[in-house]
Length: 320
Length: 247
Image (cartoon, rainbow over all chains, first blue to last red; front, side):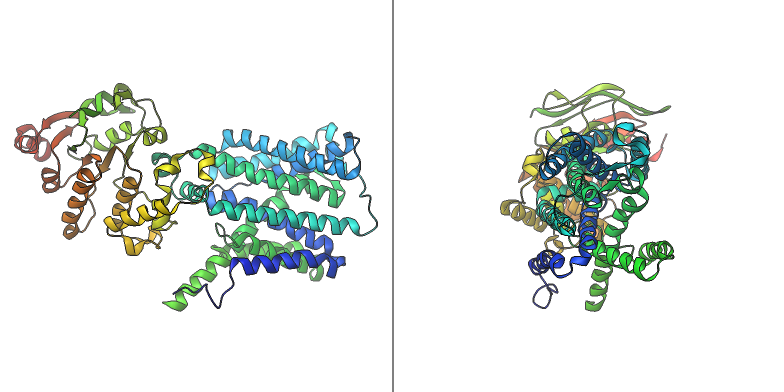
């Protein structure tokens, strides 16, 4: 009955292959380093969204806020800190992560008591508000955004550096989440998703569990924000940092496409989505947004349970 | 026997409807207490008041001598007072074994204690209780795929996993295949005698509750109508009147 054994790949095989790809990719295909870096960013996006949306049943459209906080924290620390590039980057990442976790604690205490669609709408407002605040705040460059300091290395090395950094972050995020989902905490998240009132009535400490989950997502998102801002070299309040209409929506889509609430679903979703998107940009230029919109419709209509869910259902049908 | 739960003059209103009007009842340590009454008499509301889902508008509720009337449901559960629902509540996308694991007492701990995997002893205990409920072969199935009756049994097993001192059961036999009811009564009794769980059972099936309970309280229109040993309550003219409307 065990269909996953023997002929199929184990987690460790897939992780090993991905680690190899992550390490060798930028060296073999240096021209694609930026695209590969964005792929790892997408993996972080999908994984962090899935912790709430997939595992815990809280569909957040505001996770982009933590990414944006990471972008801006790095930019401000690097601008005002007077530190050399890498020290500045490291301090910016730390400050961003702390700020995002604090924000998650505050927003979480205020918003995680709201359930279902109301939480989704509330967080959507959070993301939009953050973009508007950043766009009107002179200290962070208001509508004209902020430029990050120049990367000190030689031409082309910046892409490689951030490609590896984002790979390391995605890998760390995956391993931490994978471990967490194997603990009681992972079960508690699922219990909250399946029946919140029951979880309360069984004595689970649901509020701290939910806030911790969001804080953890915020932590990884902020780190990804600081790295991405430095890779791009410039942050626009609405198009990069608090890009709710692109990054913010993609997070949700990738997790759903791959299969939310599964270990590999978000990773798979990020890969498929990112590669398809890159192909659209290359071969359908001018129509890429139309094609992307159609892809979104196809995902929602034909893969409501994601690729993993579709695959599991197919296997079930094949065996019965 | 000392009182484990004391409900004192509890009143609960929903708008203009008084669902519980000065209800008092006592559940003694170690017994099986029954709660009966016609539909709409306020039984489930009383469960909600006791377990913290409804705030009480008046009166007090003591569990082991301590007032719990103003606690929420999670802290009440952590004191060892649990309930099940008339319409079952299980974690439908999780397997039966996972449902059991997350119902263990240690899952009620703080965040740090949650960051550990489920110990083998807990898994084993979950398996044993699933076997007790007759669900062992379903342990890997999603709880949502079980039949209604099986979900009731699972919910009962989940509650036992938590080792409560007092368990409130809301119509445990409703919707269960009549041929399985005797087995269920037997399991409720064994939970009481072997596992030492005190039970307060809402039940419409008179045969079941008369067999099971040591003492019965009958509610009607939100008030206590009668209370005492099963035979006495069954013979009480007011109880017959409330159920059958005989003048």
